[in-house]
Image 1 (tube, rainbow, N blue to C red):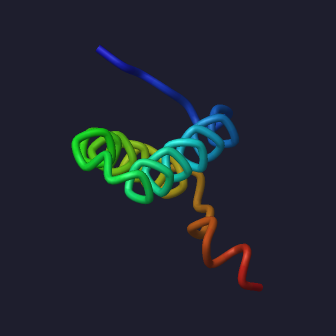
Image 2 (image 1 turned 180 degrees about the horizontal axis):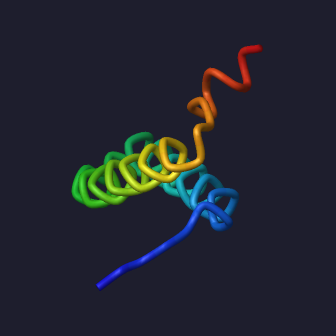
Length: 67
């Protein structure tokens, strides 16, 4: 069982950033399976981040960055 709290949002965002870099690099190298496996991780991190943001009333990071 995995439990996290909003105090870990920065770590989850950084992890997602790293995973997205892995996906980009894997796709550029033609490593489709590696990219596919990390897409699932990125999706899970997105769900975690969204849920924690909703719990704290924060707007999504992308929207916050745009303002």
